[in-house]
Every structure is written in C-alpha cells, then in structure tokens.
Image 1 (cartoon, helix red, strand yellow):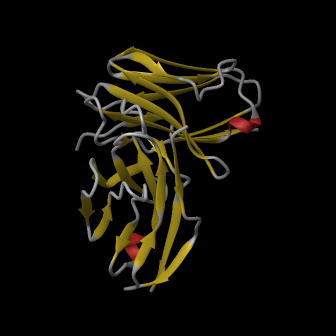
Image 2 (cartoon, each protein chain N blue to C red):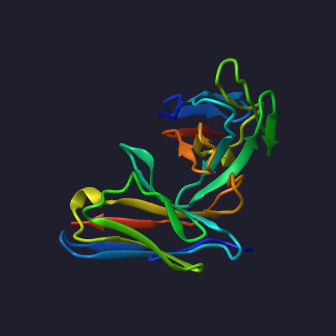
Image 3 (tube, rainbow over the protein chains, first blue to last red):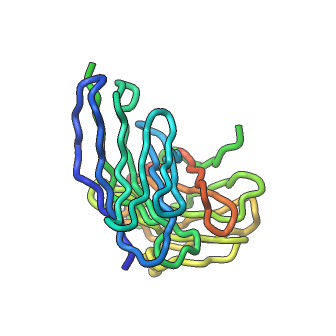
Length: 113
Length: 114
C-alpha cells in the first residue's frame, strides 16, 4: 500500500546549521506531496507542498523538490534557528488521489543556540 | 483567523467509560479527518468524511470506535468502552476541494484512559 518513510530522529543541530530531513514515498501515479510542522502542544500546520514532478515547494526558508525518479521529497533549510525546533511530517495523497493524506512517522528537530 | 476547534483539550477517564470528542471544522470546508497520534505509531488515520459522508474509516477499530457528522459544523468521535491502549492525542482536521491541498488541524484532544 501507499506509505511515507522519513529519516528517524531526533535530529539535533546548532543554530545556523544546514538541515536535511529525508522523505521517500511509495505510491503510483502522481500524488501530491507535503511537509507539515507540529510545534509543541499544537496541531500540524502546512509548511510547503508540491503537486507535480520537479515542482519545488518553499516557505519560511524551507524547500523541498518533488523527485519522481527517486520518489523523494527531502526537506532542506540553509540556516536553522532555535524557533525551527519542532516535529516535521512528510505526507502524500497517495495513488488514489482522493484527498486522503498519508503521513510519515515524523522527525523531531532540536536546534541548540 | 478561521480555525478548527476541538473539545475537550484534555480528558482523563477510567477504563470502560464512554468518551466523546468533538470537532468544529472551518466554515465552508467539506472534508473532515480524524487522526490519532502516539509515540509508537505516529499519526494514524481513523476516519475521513467528505460532505458529511464517511469515505474511509478502515483505520478505526469498529467494535469500540464510531465517527459521525450530525451536521456540517460538528464532527464527533466516540469510544465505547474505552481502554488504556486508546490513550493518545486525537486530532481533527478539515479541508476543502477534491485533493485537500491544505489541511487545517485542531489543537487535539489528549486522552488518558486509566
């Protein structure tokens, strides 16, 4: 079945370091891909999205490129801040594209001053 | 700002009791999701409604869980009887359109079953 696999956390970085969180998906066709972020005690918020191959989603300094050949959607940021500490979830609409979102396990990012 | 409202925020109950969680989706949104979040399983989809009709509840234990949308402004998730393994954070999310390009999540209900 459709699924999303993220790199295991926690990821601990110093402020201003470069961030990569890997995400790969299993689905046929051309699903949409998303990154959501969850701050402590809150629900998830959409961070960025891409709806077709080679699209680059970007927001708040974060970027991710839809790579169909490698079925990947890795999240990157050039210089992280303490305020970026959160749990990041990769998600896909899957093969059926009915609107149902399938989430990965989440990756905890901790940024130290 | 429009937001998804979930009540209660916290619930502590004893095993065997009925638990009802409520969600008010954003006005105008036509899809509603219920997710359960635990450390071990991450985010699990329990139920998915579009235009108040259930589209997918395959992730929900049918013997004790039920999800309904009595009207467009209210979604409910019930557990009867509750068990300690149901302890988790339950999130409601709403969206619109065929592909739900952006989901809006509530702050969740933290459930503890003793």
